[in-house]
Length: 86
Image (cartoon, rainbow, N blue to C red; front, side):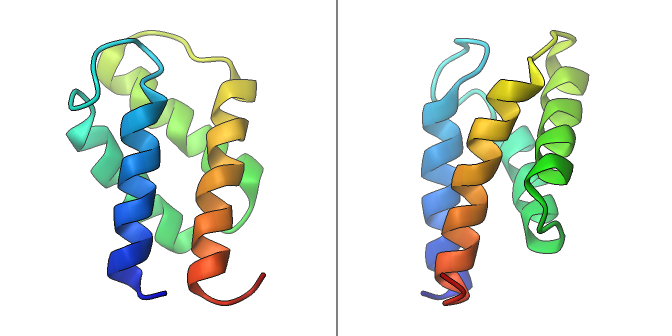
């Protein structure tokens, strides 16, 4: 799987996540930031903390780390599949 395909899958996953019930297309800036961090972070906790920071900064609403961990694991699975690590 190439990086473009990986990004498409990650975008779809993040659009469906919708932690603040703002609608599927409400998070384009946050998704872009998460994709950038996904390229450099490999640990689920590190990625989850960044996801929480990104979304909380934009919406000024708190997200439980557990919710961010769930999406983090799914995103890393997509990344590892793309790199043929799994």
